[in-house]
Image (cartoon, rainbow, N blue to C red):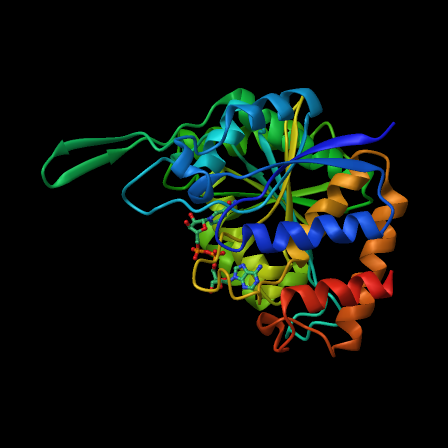
Length: 331
Ligand code: NAI
């Protein structure tokens, strides 16, 4: 049966890259039907940052493809991204960073999957103005959310023939919050004796990642560290334009690129749609359309390897649409 997909077209570069991705999915013969919604700054003039109909669509379809949405810094509305993750309990954020032979980097062997807890930590955004010069921010870590993400990371490692899961934390300083996360990790690791388990303090991990990224396989960590570390892994594989992600809960799944709405290049038709396209491939794999995802991945690899039609972030001079058409031609 044709799978209906709720598509939030985002703002900034969102509409450009989501149009390209939907065209490629159609050309690849995916068995999906898109229900598209304007959101964020593009919908704000109607008074609703995400129209109610988009929530209704997602609650019926359970699968969403989401383009990036701008979050103003220090003012304006709270992050719609964070709201969606919380509202639908999309507790696991999975970010695979795999080097692509076509994109030259000093680290051709990177193949790291970050499991980022997605609903708590400092990301709950609970800040209190104590006095004019003092602010408190609340870091929330719960046993339930920690167990879920850690067990998912180990299960993924087992089902994807991965060898090692590394817990990332700052338990030497945050003895209660990160300390509990690490304790839970050590307990759950015992249920997976076939998978190697170790842990790294976040600062040491960052150094090791840029010196020896090949040492790492699956990483699991609380929300804020996951946000930062996954951008670092994006850098290792050649940039943010190449990092897909899945936000998974027990009932709903939302697929999106890791990068943001890139207001500096919005409307210029030079955005790279690959990260959102690979997120769409993760989506197709999750709805039993892995063959279609494979065809798309092969076509993207072919265009990247040829290297004659790349967007400027990959040192080419092609437009988003020219790159899209090259992938469609390769299909
Ligand atoms: P950003 O990821 O939008 O941009 C960082 C840099 O990477 C910029 O120079 C941009 O031009 C470039 N870039 C990003 N995606 C690209 C692509 N597909 N192709 C080519 N170049 C690309 O990060 P920034 O500027 O910090 O955030 C902009 C807005 O996006 C903020 O409001 C932020 O809150 C929001 N954001 C939204 C996310 C989401 O919807 N999931 C995730 C991250 C940020």
